[in-house]
Length: 462
Image 1 (tube, rainbow, N blue to C red):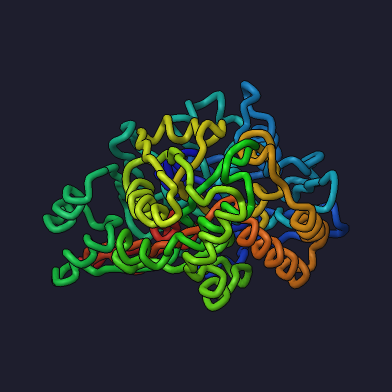
Image 2: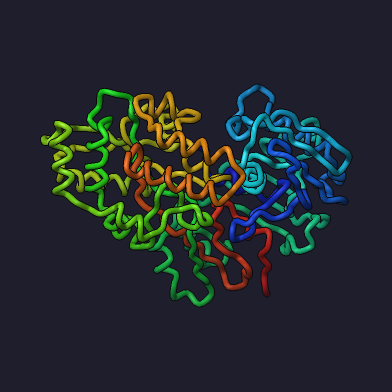
């Protein structure tokens, strides 16, 4: 788990081969087109005349170097390894053509490059010129001028950017201001031009004549996550189902998010046509305390049990407080352990918890929302060593063995229904993101990706 602002800040300095538009449709970026001559080959045709921030022109050699470095980084620690597991070789065909050879069919490739989180393209000589931890040389619409850790990044417009529509402001400052009251004060005073706010913050600002409130769904579903390692009450399916029948998700939406959220399954609403419908989710998430108590008795836990749920500050802890009270109806004594984010992230990754209240982020492909339940990556050993579902595995594997998106949708929706029934995690809700900008800022929007691509397109009036 990595703080979101780290990726947001990097996004403005780098481009990838492809990009998503506002509706998550894949669009050309550094590659003007791509083709798949067979199921295990992708050929990308690069845009000519693209310049890096140091003046060097982009070639296929730079793309190969970038991808090879990302796949096999210095030091060997690669948090993105799973995304490139099916890559075999990256080849330069000619100065403006790159070929990626895969070990097997992989339908996630276009989304992986459009997501851009792990596919930033940089010049082959960059490691000898800068420290990429605190500096950047990309092809993005802004150049990094200065970086102050945990405080701000200053950018300036890259006038040689390949897209004439980007950027439209000469200077941009990305500032970290953790406290909402401080952000609202800075916005009202004109010290900053935009910020994210809570639903309550949006109400506080709704009558400010010089401020516009924007609202949109984004990809960060809130989750009650279990570890299923054997020997605990919640290793029993009926106990998990009872908990799901008792968790009143609408009460969470109303109390924690001031009503500004929607139901979600494993795939977040807004992610194309992959999610389950709201009507189906409302049926699946009906509260039924009598049935829940019956299931608890059937599992041998009519008297409940005690458990500790790990949280971090904010919605994670707020959700836990509401659920804690709801679960008293099943005689479940859920204790709350709130810890700081860094330790929380480490313990989640290692599976060092019984329950935790967390959130998931944006994914390159629908499979990214569901691969935990196929027990891929850390999930098999750290989260679900005592649980798996054969029917789910078969549907997931079939969806990953075809490029037919209609077939994939049917199979991945089947996976989602199994996840909701089995309840290895409980999906709670997806809240709206609110952003407030001064009226002089034009063309800003709330992006579903959780990055801020709108900063590439904004302009400022007098």
